[in-house]
Image (tube, rainbow, N blue to C red; front, top):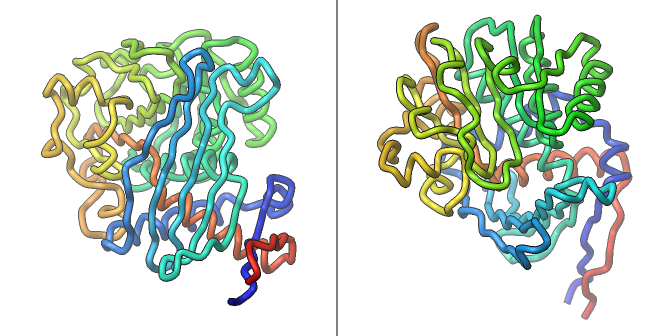
Amino acid sequence: MARLEIEYLGKPEIDQLALSNDEILTAIEQGLIAAGQGKTVIEPRMHLEPDPAFNGHFNVLRGYVAPLNYAGVKIVGDYVDNYKQGLPSELALLNLFCPRTGTPKAVIDAAGITDMRTGALTALGAKWLGPKNPRILGHVGARGTSYWNVRLLDHLFDFDEIRVHSRRPESRDAFGERLSHDLGKKVIVTTDWESCLSGADIMVEATRLNAPTPMFDRAWVKKGAFVVPYGTMSALPLDFVDGFDKFVMDDLGQMRAGHLGALRPHIDAGKITEASFHAEIGEIAAGLKPGRERDDETILFWHRGMSTGDIALGAAILDKARAMGITQNLLYRED
């Protein structure tokens, strides 16, 4: 038997890589194109809730990206009270495997991967589905993925006005300060949903509600806007989906499975069906279906998180770490 080693990358190593905005976007776009071309396998996420008293759960995401020659499994914990212990709400590991033999190839810290690939998916969705020249971004939510939503959207569009909001004042103030520092521009921190979202060209809802609660008023959405709601617990009233010209999904398997997500109440009520969706985002990335076709189209993009994005970004991170010589090899087995 051959000596088998696993490459390991923790957060300190990933921080050393200093991935650029374009490196992140390119990796995720390549994964989306592969998905659109039918060169991936995406299994719907699975949930594990160890104990309701812990106020958290695990998501298990599984997938395969043929052009990258990796299968992968990401396990991410989502614990909303972690801030009380000075911990991020989401901590994760990505495991990459050889799809031909099942051999473990790498273990990578994936908390940052989750944040970056989510932000990249939001930004790429706006690239293909958003208004031609959006000037105002409204963003509710201040978790890790929120930072990358705003950062990568602004990288693509250089907004005139960025508004952010979250429930806790200390959280939203710190979020606004960090964004203002990193983006080099003023960021408006609002005290309520309406002043954050109303009339924005691009509207993102990334909240962490404890239960489905109608918070996002449909009247705030102007004609031609691009809307991305992806909170685990829906913030959308049932009438929210009325009047949209296009609905786009990251992966329809995610729409069919589970009981959570922004549009789940609308699916359960029969207001949204699989036939309601214009496309999966990979089909648009691969050029198989059109994105935005008119300036006045009002478009909603629902993404629940694609395992293929984790794998694609993980593979890019691993390649760059190898080139920089900062991976650690762990002995897996030697027979």
